[in-house]
Length: 254
Image 1: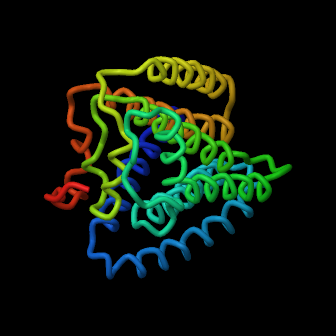
Image 2 (image 1 turned 120 degrees about the horizontal axis):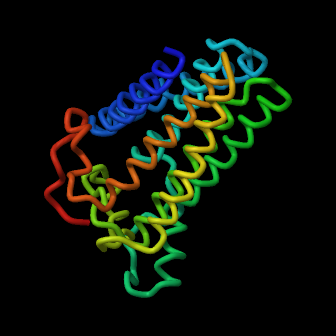
């Protein structure tokens, strides 16, 4: 069970957490203020928990740190999808075929969101600095790196661009995604992630107790992120696992 429970827990958190964010974002915009207020309170509580769990070397500490890092990440995702924390640019791409201009504008539409994630990552690293339990820092850093990789791959072009996940007020983001069967970065992303996942799992096998649990939780989340990368270029609908949480697609183009 030491090897089974962490992956199952990570899968449950990944699937349910993603669905809840989509569900809240799909509700009427008048409810977003309350969703963000409650989510902010939860994120603050999660940061307190991360600080307290930094020196908890038990298995419960590993689960707590992992869960709290995901809760803080969920706040960032909700803040972005509700349109509250995006970037200085709020318009569709003005030059979709012009590389430098397209990249510059793509950075502008997500700039505040990315800077907020970096700032939060630094805060979590500071809260856990010198602690024996680094699961929260590992988890948050992993989520950021893999999400950044996904954004670059969407920018370069993939089969499944995921417009279905965008709420109506963010449909302009789709103009920065390119549709291609595959791009040169995606295989490298999957390969690098696989190498890290294998190394992490190997370390978990050699470890024991809370260390093993923490490593397996992080490795499981990395494997799920790799699956999300592969789904970008498969014919499977990207909404397959979260149809219950998605609102009907918007009928007007940006």
